[in-house]
Structure formats: C-alpha cells, structure tokens
Image (cartoon, rainbow over all chains, first blue to last red; front, side, top):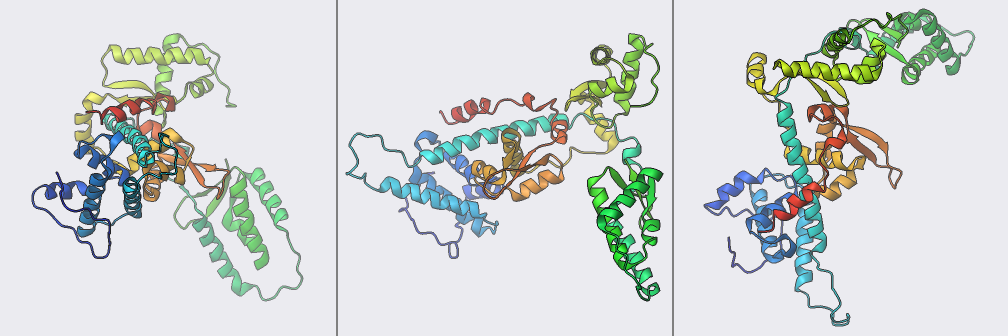
Length: 257
Length: 189
C-alpha cells in the first residue's frame, strides 16, 4: 500500500473524518476492533508494510497509523487516550529524524536513534503478546477436560454466608423496635467497646453459637446497641468467627470456625 | 485432625483405593500433604499410591484421568471425550477472555507482583477494565501495596489461574525469554 500523498503533520480529532477507501478498507474495518492497544496496532502496521522492526520507516508507519486512528474515529469506535499518546510519540520521533544533526556534537559519535525506545517497547510488548497466545492455547486445551462438580459440604451448603448488609438489616430492625420502648435514660452506665468485644467473645467461646437477634435484644440503650453492633463487626473482622444466615432475612448466627 | 485414626493397617492396594476416594470427593485439587494428614500416612507412601492410581487409569484406558494440577491432584475426564461430555452437559467452551484481558493476564503472570503503572508501561494501554474482569474471574488476586510513591496495589495470579490454564505451578510456564526469539524472528524476512 504505497502512499504518495504529501505528508501531513496536523491532526485535529474534532474535524478529521474517516476516509473509507473502497476495497481494503472493509478489511480494515473488520480488524479495527481487534487491537488490544496502540503497540498492537503498530506491530500490525509494521508487519503489513513488511518493514524491518529495527529500521522502521517512521514516516510511512506514522501515516498509516493516523489513517487507522481516523478510521476508528469515523466508525465511532471509542478512541482510547493511549492511542492518541502514541500518535504524539510517533510524530515526535518523525520530527526528530527530520531535524539535522546538531553540528556541535562530536562527529562520528554514536547518536541514539530516536526510534530506539519505541523499538525496545515494541519488542518487549511482542513477547507478552506471544505469551498471551500461549495462555489462550493452554486455556483451550484445558476447557476440554472436566472435573467433578461440587459436592455439598460445610463449605458450600445451603446456609448462606451473611454479609455486612444482612447484619445491618437485623440491627435496623431492632433499633426500630427499641425506638418506642425507651422513654428515657436515667443513668448512663457506659459499656466500652473493648468490654463489649470481651463479653461477646466469651459467649461465643462458651456456647459456640450466638444469635445476633438475641444478643442485640439484651442491649438496654441505643448507645449500647451501637456498641454491640460495632463489636460484632470487629469480631468478625479479627477473629475466626463466621456469620451464618440460614434463611434470607432470617436470624444471623455467629459461629466459631 | 484430632479424631482418632485407625492404626495403619492398610495394604498398599487399600491405600491406593482410599486415595482414589479422597481425590474423587475433593472440590479442589488435593495436595499430597493433605492426603497424608487425613489418612495418617507418610507423604512418600501417599505419593506413590497416587502415581500407582494414575498408572492404573492409564493402563485400562479409562475415560477418567488422575492429574497433577495447581499443586494438587484431581480426577477429571480425558480431553478426547470433550465433544460427548459437552453434548451431555449442554455446554460450550465458556466465554473466552478478550485480547486485552489475555495480554494483561500474561503480563501479570510473568511480572508478578506487578502494579497497574508497570502493566501500562508494557502494554501501552490502560488496563483497568481488564484487571477488573480478571479479578471478577478470580484469575488474579491483589498482593499488597508496593512500597513506593503512591503505594500502588500489586497483582499476581491465583490458584484458579493455575487450574484454568492447566498448570502445576508457575514454573511450568515457559520462560518469557523464549518468546523473544519468536518476537525477533517474526520480523526477519
């Protein structure tokens, strides 16, 4: 695909529209969605141009790259910002290569090829691309092999593992019920969180299972209730304790693991 | 295991048989160590029992196989019967990972523990949604924060990754440098 058009450096994403050339464009259209990123697209273009990766014809590849970006834009494919970043990188390299060498620099000294960094990245990326192909093949082979389905055991039986939201529901129910009952608090005997945690721990150790409903019911004041709730959260987080709910919206049981 | 275990009176044939039972009921690949603990047998004896079992299945060309995967042992169907098994289960090969997710997974598998910026550096593209997908599919897990500016989260592959890609452990993956040759030669015309 030899392009003899004058080189164009300006690129406005707002006004540029895709030019869908008849023929090979359809093929392009099909392939557009398949690029995993700008490096992937670049590799594809370099191969398509049958160019040597160690001597990339940067002007030609940049033009091709821009053509694809316009196409994507025209086809309304959401353009990832990373594709735009690569456009800038390519244009920068291209302009660097057009600039005459700095005469102040020592003659004959090896000057870094502006393309070098990009080539290194492409080669590194290509390795992982090949590795992902290998993973794909492994997964395909593996999918032809079936192991036994799950057998019911303690780990996965019908008891539903309760979530924080389930505890909250239980807590809210009790708070709502208590609201009307408590008329006034005469004296404030504060139970600290540490104490509450100690009490709860003791009960779990003694009776192996503690019903959250019953535990919350025992609390005299709203303050105590809140402390009790925090204690439950803390114990579940730090100790080997499981929350088990046998029926949705049912009572939640604290059980030692 | 606090239960009282019977005295070791198993013959080697019995050991092979009971190992078979346990491998069958285990939900996940079961390790030699766990088999040894449950049966109160030396790991060496268990190990040779498992290998004997594997040979037996192979010798009679069973439809099942005893295979080593993700650090343990598993009983599974043989790959050549996948058509029939799928027809019965009415399943198709499950949804494949997208190109982006596979690439991200490859980077994580080889570079773990690895952070999001490090993945971006290699892939040249943001991988946030791919990482989300991989986490949801439990193919990767978080591996704590990296002690560097911003303390970014690190990711690594999970046990499910080993299982789904049929690996005994990570060392079974070919070296990433093996792909270099492939990458280089692809361009030499």
